[in-house]
Image (cartoon, rainbow, N blue to C red; front, top):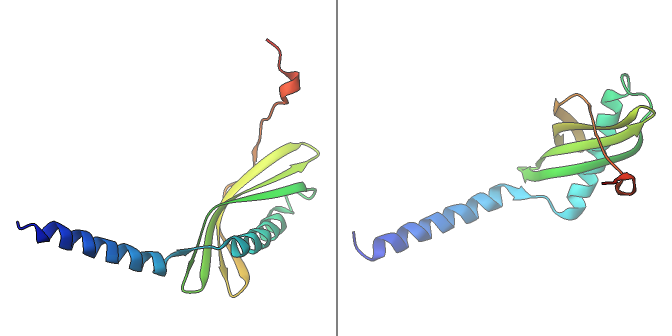
Length: 120
């Protein structure tokens, strides 16, 4: 193997990664924020029959990609109701502005503590 072979392999690998990065672009902050709001509304609507009162909603988008105009995202949707704080994990696609929830894990209780209540 000559000296040029590793350079050629490195160059090809870099070119392929740049091409892949363009094909699977991450979301810009503005796009992710808008998608997060739409996804949060869709999840709230989908679980409303089981959880009618949802207060202080929050969504965390773990990853967000746009491929050929289709946005995909994995997320955690948090809310508070009269029984406590809950989190719902899921995945969604946004196609032509419409949210499709492709995976939704049932609500799990969030256990939290207040530091001022901690004593040794």
